[in-house]
Length: 278
Image (tube, rainbow, N blue to C red; front, top):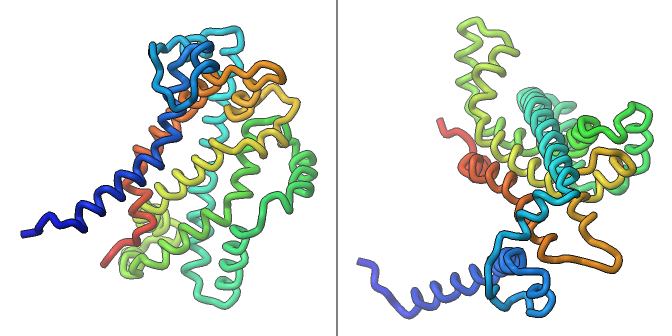
């Protein structure tokens, strides 16, 4: 039987300390969002709220600027959906082809695509902007989703590629013996087995796209299609900053992506831990 030792106590204390440090920003976020404007200015951030109220949430959801907030939520959801769907469809197919062709050219192409992960996106900002303008993608939520597909494709191919290589070839060989074509084998046999990798790609890409502020500011600047991070930034005024309302909007913006993560968290962890074992 496991004995409760001093080392166990020390380990539990350490875990609690780490948990408090990690969760402290979320405490500040909720604490200030529940304060009134006067209380948020007069008291320190760590001081517990005296009279918790949901007035800040009601205000940002019903004020004159609420329409912009709803539009930002819709655009962020649309852009994330377009980006995730494109990365899942094209990223998985690309990774499958490159991982199942054992030629030197395929290996070189795979490593070149994967190398795109370490290249800062800012290096290609100017040519990407010029190309997006030529294709008419500027100012469009769907167009920005397509830009994200191109920007995050190396990450998608890298994650799918590692998982495809872990799949036993027996599944595909059995399908080929039954007369299935290469495309049908991929669609009906391989892709369903990639569910853990799909969960990982969808979660990571969704979080990156949802939280990104710089790219929408550049490619949607001046248009009538702001994303949620841009809308949140608009709450910061030059002379008047209402932190209680800003934090309330931040919490509202966290809800959709948190729900997505809770749905895919099992697949997300499984996608990192390994592939299918034969």
